[in-house]
Length: 248
Image (cartoon, rainbow, N blue to C red; front, top):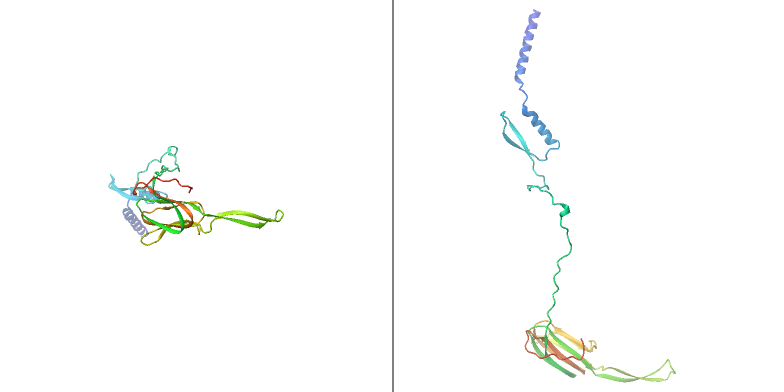
């Protein structure tokens, strides 16, 4: 009886083993390579690689290949190339292009007014329509002079009375030229001698804008050599320039 039970148990064990062995499938050939590929990608393979399926293999299975995707800051979709050789790179220079200096064309002038004014607290005025500037007013001053004799005591000799003759510009001498807009009377420019102006014997005044102007001369106790000149080109006819008695 005991031998019969033992035989039955052995038969059941063998049948169970046969059933279990029939449920286990053989290992897949591509499973190992897929795992290895996965491990390679995770262990320093191409970062951001995309898996692209390919045609089926001869054994009916499918294989995968990896296509690298450029990372930000790399070449992107440009074609890689060889860098330009350093030893043949043209040298840089900081020198710029110098344009030739423009030499202004000399302006030929003509005189439109010349006179020597002997002023005694009087005024004279003129108008002129300036077509092409500039208009230049040149003036040479000859003020009346005053001579005085001064008496004083000398402190460096015998303390006797001394006299000295002193010649100075007349305190009543002055001159002023004013350029105005005729309609409004607004002063465009002015120059003069004494009364707030310097006592230089030669002065000039320049008007640089086109237009019609009122030119006034006034003064006292002096004579003024006055010449007004404008460019020949673009203005009405004038006369040759006169030589002035002073420099400017």
